[in-house]
Length: 482
Image 1 (cartoon, rainbow, N blue to C red):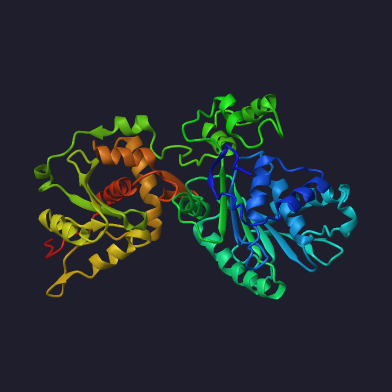
Image 2 (cartoon, helix red, strand yellow; image 1 turned 90 degrees about the vertical axis):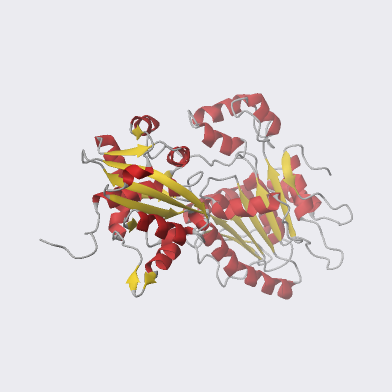
């Protein structure tokens, strides 16, 4: 069987291996939901049998697909087939929350009870937190909530990590670290290769677990025992062209028609990015809104300042490091004669290796203190700068910045722009950073979200820090005369 045209990339069927796919397809028919072509292709490839062992060749199956394509049907069918494969098998379904997992389970249990497979199933348990569908052979299917500890120590023959877009890399990897060893134990005990299924629609910039895994597969970094499938529209397809959406969606014309597609589109209203993510399986890397509105940003721009004009002006340098320490940005914050503050991006350095020397150079040249966050991506550079000294005396002066102050820096900057007491020197890199920086809230306060933003955040963050520092300068060093 050849891959469907709507498959953008993935594993090709190995013709020399037998497959469990036909039995999966028969199971789907008996459940009352026959497989459509894309589902059957996944079942055939994921069900390939290793001639050397007589069991499943693949231990990991990754499926990226749009909404409304029948992903849940495929999962339920595969779970049922696996449960009936031999006695006492343990199948788990993990979703974003316990409620999501249990709702999915309830729909499955009702479908199973009405199907031709009902005689093989016992009465399901439906109590919250203890739901289970057990079969006459002793096997069971259970729903679980996705948490950092979900499934740790639990023996599993198959589990599905559904809607994986909801996971950060840290949470997703922690779950897999706890589940993978138990699957190896089951393989030795039962003689059947357990399988881990990771399924999801494409996510957002914050979907770091699924994004990273999918990006590596697309780049050709595919482990030998992993099969993967990526369904959806090519990147150049207009999401508003419903004929093209029908052409590339794996369930179009099979599970719903063009009229229903129009109804689906209407539900998203003006959320084009959300629509494209759901029905074209296109990652949403954008933001709901800019931190600083474009008209406010444009209205508060001033001409770049001459470095020589900085001499003799109360001056602070703000420094910030981008996520993963890819860049270091340095901005100047100046108190002007009229009492307002001007910020100007000085430079953006690659990495942090050469940053200490440049920071010391400009701070000493202008006899200016330094302000930066002591946590997050900037923490290592901050610690290195703190340790610099000359004959026992520190090389740099710092504007102290508490955790509470840091959460106020961004809001203070935007408020200052609105009130006309902060301005920024025009700069292409700073403009781009302001355009593409998103925010995340902590109570009523917010900070720039480095993971949700679309580019470098350090230019804007360094400008915000510089403005705060200009308004909170430390006392000058040396002898004070009163």
